Image: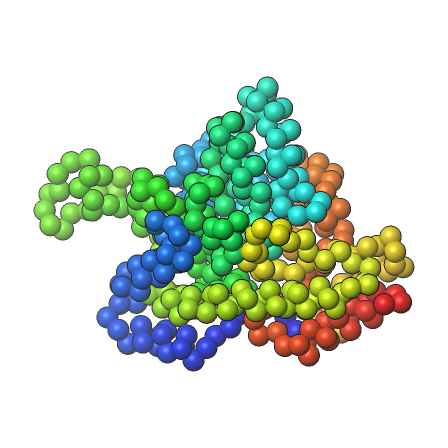
Length: 388
Ligand SMILES: *Cc1c(COP(=O)(O)O)cnc(C)c1O
């Protein structure tokens, strides 16, 4: 089976991890801060806080923006459940903003009209989580304008987007949001096995996130409420978590970072090849903004079901049977049983549902060969049962 995504592990990656294993520190040593500097430096952010997953990063990001019971937070329905769960961990109430049918990202026009209504009803969100879906950046300029007008904070869930650019700025640079989150799960653009990072330019947010990922404990005299009893002293000033990244993960991440640019370039090469191979197929290929550089995490097609005699499910199953590990990113979050129980109906977000009925993710990862790409296209041609 050709998988839809796969990590790229080199000899140098393996050596980097092995070296840590025979060093003094398996956790809380020099590798984690080095990895943080590497990622934050690449993205152009002042601070990077490495954690054990993007999910943890999203959680502490919501926490430090003071999201809590009684608050609303909004996100897109076309994302992984973690983009929405993070607000629920804080006791906030969730709502969604439908996607744009062209970009498949949270739609700024839908956001504006929802905000106008929410203002009247006193339900303006405190936090908006935007997702750069497939790596394609959201319209951050429009979203930032709305955040200033309506007074909400912005977290970028950039789990798909490390290495991409919004206009001239690398994703994570932080000019358009409060905090940006990356994921280093093996299918993502670079990996630390499990892992994530929160980036920010704000020292107050950075310091508080740093504290929350280590049990809410501080040794910082400025933060302590009274003088230390002695040199052994630390204070817990908040209820935090153990969300730390290990030295092994950080060493792998540092080594992977040296190939980030080439990984993204290779992903773009694969995407351009798909674009040309799919010319004439009854499918919609991914839209690209001419001024942005996608992180190109996923390559999603939408099957034009009106022009073929197969169902979406038949096309998907046929490709799987032919050994192509297609996926569907994502089942709209509001349709999950846990969210349905809050009262959401599938058709509350019709563009998300239209997308869900047609979308298929084709394999894309740096090691995908030209021969495998041709196999993917052959299997799609067969699956569509059409004249292409
Ligand atoms: C993968 C992913 C996450 C979760 O990342 P983890 O590191 O596995 O916690 C969150 N949001 C999006 C959009 C993702 O793709």
